[in-house]
Length: 188
Image (cartoon, rainbow, N blue to C red; front, side):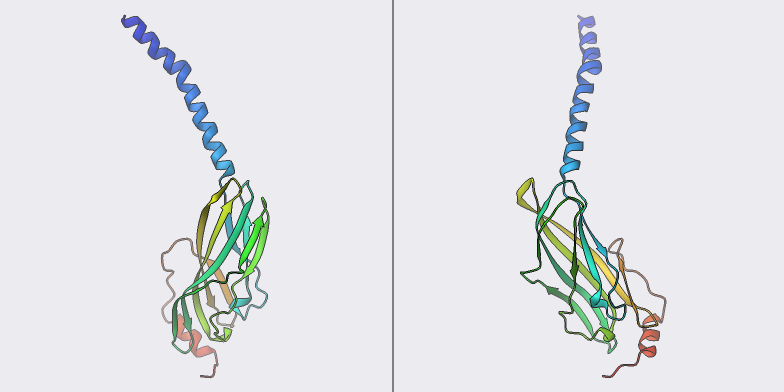
């Protein structure tokens, strides 16, 4: 009897376990292959002196088509030269929809100056670009993605965008904001 139990365990370990591991591996790879992956990248600025003229590129990096990609911008925080701070302004326009993106296809979008601020007044703006989209293989489920970006003004008046790696605040050298405010001439 002991021999039979030992043989059964050996059989399971040698024959059944590898088959189970193989099936799980194939299933995992298949899900990874068809799972939607989308990215948002900063494009080249059309006017480096206006932060709102920088395009953003939404790209389908997955292996299946995406549909009904809606994007909207949340201006989390906007610091202006006149010491005004705008906080949590969400801009949702119903027509900001990309009907579909095929595999490796991209679409260019702009964050318009919907907050009505003169570009020269912006010192720093922290925004989220939020996406909702459907995958071709799961049409009843909406996926979401949110990426945080920041734009800051350099001493020469040009703006530089970058993506946050995390939600941690990026420290600025002490006095940088005051130097920027003092170097830029503006009318109040």
